[in-house]
Image (cartoon, rainbow, N blue to C red; front, top):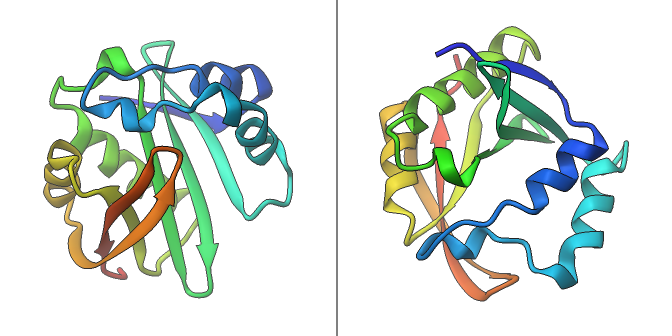
Length: 155
């Protein structure tokens, strides 16, 4: 699958924040009360995280976000709700890693967080070479959630 990646624009951020996932993935739905805060964070030029819109076959397909932390890069991923569950997660994750390595020229450790209940995403990340290394309880929009931390070794 070929993806086109570009810096996220405001209209794409608005659309992304309105994506609605079915159970049990409603955890990823941004509540109306948090919409303005999330939009401001995505659009802030110096918030520490870079957001990218990802297109497939000319349609807005997903997002990548990158947050540099010392020698590491934290990766965030999202696929449109109607495209989830079609067994493209591994390939999408590999595309994000390829973009990081080729376009951002980042050779260090890449890591990500995934809610512990999201076994589907965990399998995709493991298929792309990520390995669990830690976990953390964190407060999210929906209460206390356990996140599995997964890493991809340096190249």
